[in-house]
Image (cartoon, rainbow, N blue to C red; front, top):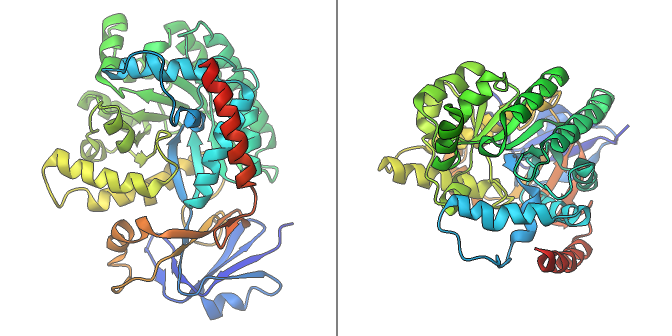
Length: 446
C-alpha cells in the first residue's frame, strides 16, 4: 500500500467537466488514486497521516499527456548523416531514421529512453504513448523500454512498428504479440503503469501479408494499432500506385481501424478517409512541430474535428515538452487558415481534453483530470497569474503563461518523481554522462 499524499495550498486546476478552478485547494492521493479534490480545509479533514506537499502560490493541475512519442530518436540529436542532406521526407527517412533504427542496440535504446524520460518529468509529462522503431534489434526490445518506464515512473504505452523494409515483418509481429500478452497478464492486478498496443511503421513499408497477419494477431489480442498515416504525400501516392488504395483504406480492409487505434499525422488524408476514421472511432494524433520540421505540410485539423474525429497532440520525438507543441499548433493553424483568431480553444482541447480521452483507452482509470477515482498524476507549476485566473480566463493563462512556466513537482500515481525541481527516481548526471558515451559509440556504427 502506498502512503497517502496531500498536495495543498495552491490554485487547483481540475480540468474536470465543469473546468473547476479552486483558488486555495488541495488534492489527496491514496494508493495511487485521487481520493479527494476541494478546498484546502475540506480535503485536509480526510488526509490524516498523509505526507504533505505544500504548493502555496503555485498551480496544481493534471500531468500532461503525449499521444505520440519516439523515445528511440534521442541519439539523432547532433548526429551528422553520412549521406548528402535530404531534399524531401523520403530522403529524411532513408538517410537518417532508417539507418539509425537499424544500428540501435539494446543499450542504445535504454539510454535513448531514459534521457527523454528525464525531460518528461521536468516538463510535467506524466503519460506517453510511444511508437518504437529498431529494425536491428526487435526481439525483447519492448522489455527494455518497459524497464526504463518503470525506473522513471512515467505512465507509458508501448508498441513496435512492424515493417518489411528489412525483411523482418514477421519478427516484428511476434515481438508485439509477446509484449501485449505479457502486459495483459499483469494488468488488472495492481499494475497499471505500462500498457501495450500493436505497432505498424507506415503502410508504404508494410506488405499486404504482413498487414493481414498483424491485423489478425491484434484482433485476437483485443488491441488496436499505432501507425503513421499519410504523414507525407508520398505515403498516399505509394499506396495508391502499388495497392490502388490509400493507407486508411488498407487499414479498413483488414479491420485495423477502431476506437483502440491511433492514426498518426494524417497530414494528407482525404475527406473520404476522414469519414472512415470518424465512423470507426480511430483517433488521429497531430504533430505540428515535426510536420513543419520535415516540411510535409500542416494537417487540416479543423476539418478532422468537424468530421467527428478525436484528434490528439503529440511531439513525434521532437521534444518531451507538450506545451511547446500546443503553442506551435495554434500558430501553425492560424498561418494555414490566415486567421489570427483561429484554433485557440481547439489547440488547448487537443492537449488538455482529447489526449486524456485517447490515453484513457489503454488504462483502467481517468487520466488528465483531478477528480476522485482518477489516477494521481499531478504537476505543480511555478505560476503567479498577473491577471485574474478563473474558469473563463484559464485558457488564455495556459497558452500565454503556463506554457512557459517552470514545473516544480511531478507526481505519477501518488509517487513523487520530482520535488522542488529535484529528480527522485532517476540519477540525471549519471544517465546523461553514460548516454554521451553510448551515443559516441553508436555514432561510429551509424
